[in-house]
Amino acid sequence: MSGSRFRRAPAALVMAVVAGTLFAAPAAAEQPTSTRMTSIIPAPVSAQPNPRADYEITGRTAIHAPREAKGVADYLVGVLGSSTGHKLRIEAPKHNPKHGINLVLGGLDRKRGPEAYDLDVTKHGVVLRANADRGLFAGVQTLRQLLPTKSDARRHGWRVSGGTITDEPRFGYRGAMLDVARHFFTVDDVKRYIDLISQYKINHLHLHLADDQGWRIEIKSWPRLATYGGSTEVGGGPGGYYTQEDYKALVAYAAERQITVVPEIDMPGHTNAALASYAELNCDGVAPPLYTGTDVGFSSLCIGKEITYTFIDDVLRELSALTPGPYLHIGSDEAHSTPEPDYLKFIERVMPIVAKHGKTVAGWHEFLKATPPTSALPQYWGTTNSNTEVTEAAQRGNKILMSPANKAYMDMKYDPSTPLGLSWAGYIEVADAYGWNPGTHMQGVPESAVIGLEAPLWSETLENIDHIEFMAFPRLPAYAELGWSAWSTHDWESFRQRLARQGPKWTEQGVDFYRSPQIPWPA
Ligand code: NGO
Image (cartoon, rainbow, N blue to C red; front, side, top):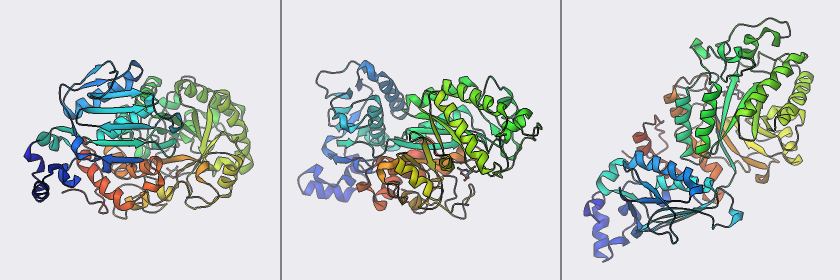
C-alpha cells in the first residue's frame, strides 16, 4: 500500500495510525475520489464495503467465464480495456473462483430473477454471480462504477473497491426513449447513447422512428417513406434514415448491452412524413408538403381507406421481422385531426395487425380509449396524478409504463435559463426528476400494476449528440435509480452525493452534462 494513496486525507491517516489500525480510517480516507460501494447508482439492495479488501486490476488479471457468458466477458474485456488500457484475457472458469475476475452463472435463488447478481470483491479477486447474462451484465456495470477515474488510477492503480453487494431490480422495465424523427441522429450517435444509458442498467430503448417531420426507417415495400419522408427534419436540415441493416446493427448493439429496442411508428396522427411520401394515403389523394416546424396534431392517416391498413400491415410486418423484442409501439398520441369515432375504429383495426405479426402492442395512453387487451402496454405521459382510463386499465390487468411528462420528460428544461428543450410540462431540475415514486405516482395504479418507467427525450430542439447528453445527464441516472432501486433506498441527500461522483467519470468519457447547481460536483 503506497502512502500516496492517502495524500488527500492526511488527518485521517494520522488518526488511523494513532489508533494502531491503518485500515480503521473512515472509508472517505481510503478511497479519496474513486467510487465506493456506497456510491453506486442505481443504489443496490445492499452493500457492505470492506476497505481492507480492495482488488487491483493489472495487465496480468484474467477474466474467468463459462462459454455461455462469453458475450458479457467480451464486453467486460472491452470496457476494462478502454478504461485501464489492459487487454485482459478470458480463461476457463475456475472450480473454486477466487483469484482474478470470475463471472459465474447460476447459484442465486431463482426467485430473485434474471437481472439479480451478487458481487464479492476481495484482495484476491472479484466474484460476480447471476442466474443469467442479464444479471452478469448488471453486475459488470456495478463493477465499472467501483473503478477509480483514470486520474486516480494513475496515482493508486486500478483498484476495485472491496466488499460485497447483493442486488436486484425493483421494476423489470427501465427505459429511455429517443426521438430520432424531429431531428435525425446517426447510428454512431445512437450507439453512444446506448453505451451511456446501459451504464445505469437501463434495459429498454424506445426509438420514436416516425413523426410529421421525418420517417427514419427503411421500409422496402414503401421505399419513399425513408428516401423522401426521411429527407428533412425540424429546421429544414437534411434528416436521414436507418437502412434495415443499420437498424439491425443498432438492435444487435443494444442486445449485447442487454437492451431491448422498442420501435415506434406513431399513428394515426404525427404522420405527415408518410402522407407526404405517398399521395394515396391521404383522404383527398393529395400529398402535403414535407414539414419542418414543431406543431403537433395536424396530420392523420385516412381512416376510411383500405390502403391505410395495407400500408400499416406492410410497415409492421417489416419492422417486426427486424425486431426481436416483444413490443411494437403504435404511438396513438395527439390524434387531434382524427375524429374520435374514427380514432377508435383505427386503433381497433391496427391492434390485431400488431398481434398478427407476433408482437405486443404498446402505445401512448390515449389508445386506452379503444380498450386494448390486458397484454397491451399503455405508456402514461400525462401531467396529472389521476387518469380514469389509466386507472381502469390497471384494474383490468394492464401493466402501465410511467413517463409522466412533468417528471420524466428529459426534453423539459432544467430551469428557465436552460438553452435547449421545452417547458410545456414545467421545469425539471435533478431533484424533480428524482423526487417522485413510480409505484405510487398515480391514483388507483398500485406498484403491482406498474411495469416500470421510461424517460423520453423528444428532439424538437436537440440537433446533435452533445445536446442529447446535456439533457439526459444528469437526469437519466435519477430515472435509472427510480426504476432499479428499492424505494427503501430512496434518499435525495445520498443520491446527490453519489451523483456528484459520476461527474469526473463523465468528464473522462467526454459527456457534455449539465452542471446542476443542486449537485456538489467535485472541484
Ligand atoms: C408530447 C408529444 C410529442 C412532443 C413532446 C414534447 C407525446 C407523447 N406527444 O409527448 O409529440 O414531441 O410532447 O415534449
